[in-house]
Image (cartoon, rainbow, N blue to C red; front, side):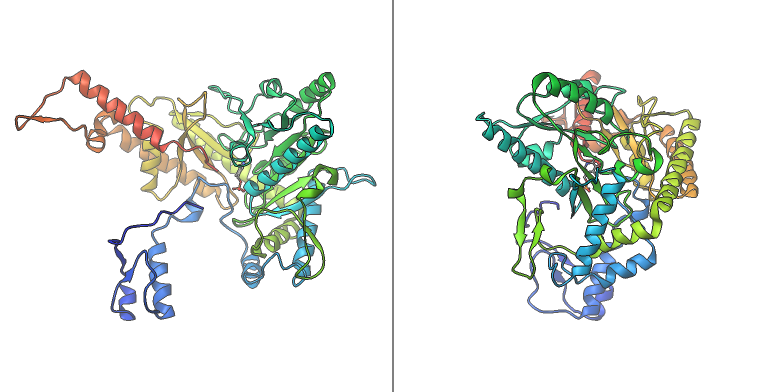
Length: 491
Ligand SMILES: *Cc1c(COP(=O)(O)O)cnc(C)c1O
């Protein structure tokens, strides 16, 4: 959640036209009011203010599900008051989570023989899932080093900045380059040393949807492990790709079919087709999840092993995931993913036809279209994004991470509820936006008013700056503006 700051005493109030029927005074915005208000008023005030939020269905920035069937909405509302963690009170919900874990483990080709038992848990999303997987690797590596009598105070990990920072593991990052926006397995393997707890591969880059070559990573790492005697494992962050690859590219080997892949996370709330609040992490084998990380809760009833960063949470999302898995089946997921891919193609071809964009995404991968302007000397991608807001579309523009930060792209994520009609409509609106931008003066002059270069008044007058000076300042201000908008997390 956003880290909210507290405001000063002089803060404003919340006014509401409709609510004035019920309440005479305005409500303080940042302090709890002295008195209660009628429920109708509270509803109206909040409802009215929320109207200014964007329409989630037109939010093309997000991978997260914005539409489910009404039957599932009904199940979600019916379970809204169930705390997932009270497993003894709600044994059926627990059973549904177990079934989901099993179905997903099968989907990811976990070896489920006599000797091997995959384990897994439901999480709030991939982020929690990644933290759990990272912790398991860290602990496993520490235990092994300790047993060997070797130092275990300098763990590192290839990829995953957030985990590295939160759990004090050194981060080793593979730099990207222009035209190549996924981790190069060769470079990743070069970075591996005896302190590497794991290499995390991403199935479905958030930048351009591309799948990293997990098979090549596995093969290279097998070689390196053989040479060095280490056993550096792989985790696959399949937040978006985990529910795409099995249906669109069943022959692609990225999952537990590869021996070094020890754990995989997936977001149920992305292409798992459930509303925000559910993710999954599966371990190949119960040995891959050190015992000491498992907490046994039994004060609410029977003994239940848990591995989670938080305790209480809603049950609805688990139930909704189970609904989608049984409602759609393999066939249904495959249809949805194929439709998404086709709609992404319609959009991509429409954009190509304008002749104004380079397509940065690949045909294979997450159904999204990432594109950048061929010519951004007059206007850039941020301006296109801003113009599209006028039509209601939310299409983010962002700069790529190092060493490709000079590239800016626009990205449209194609979800189940983004129909072909909407894809065609979006192309038309992008054309309109370009047309309007073309009619404007180029951005350098257009932005003068925004970035207001203040001249110092001398003797009551205004100092005239040379053209070069002004241009330089404008360029600096413009760069600052772009850097300030740079987002790293575009999930
Ligand atoms: C979305 C995403 C995440 C974060 O997942 P949440 O489910 O939103 O917590 C992590 N990694 C990748 C590759 C993603 O696409």
